Image (cartoon, rainbow, N blue to C red; front, side, top):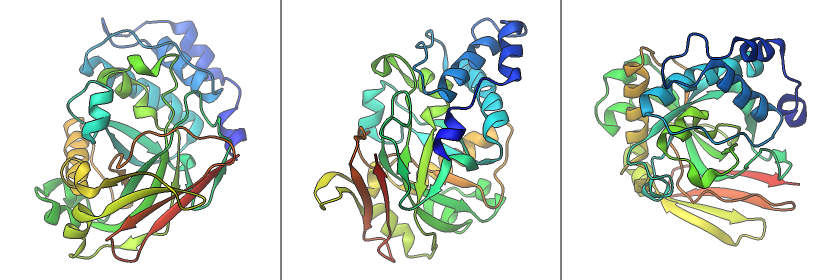
Length: 288
């Protein structure tokens, strides 16, 4: 599945966008041709040129084009991801606030999935978490406890992002936004029904990244993500609404990284465990 999706040939819409060039683009918003070229590199697992410096507003404009092209290749949208929600990751990319990307259903695979270590142009993995929307009334929530009332499941999640560009060290918040926050793949564990007790559990849990022998590769706390993972949910709801969208029941929301961004290697097996979260959830992935 992974190879057939990611190595598909450049579709006619890409060629058309390249022929159109920058027609209709704003002064600094990446052109349709730029976005099409980025997506063609993404689909072929080839590093793309680093984007030129741009404002966050122009990066969001470019992201809309990138996501539109991705949608024609990957199909149905599954939800959204918040990136740069961890202070250490913000520092790495020199940006002091979260950014938003789009998740597609074709990106999301079940617990135990196997991937080639080179699953992307610049592949990484991280401990993450998904929350599933129960009601669009989430947009009216203002606190973690209120947000949890409009979510029906917590889902263990290892995200496998791809920073895709030639030199990821030069990416900042706008560049991360433009490349759809590096969304590539993700592995989901079994959903856990939400309960009121999870407000405290999510904040206090310890999230560990373990290798196949049980050695700890990294760890984080629930509070490492914007002070509380549900704050990332609140931020996503507000940011989607700011852009004229609205969350729907069933949407999946990725809250961001509890761990460092780690490089995969052939033969590595990874398990993420959420100590302190009811049900003892975990999720695993392996690389070949």
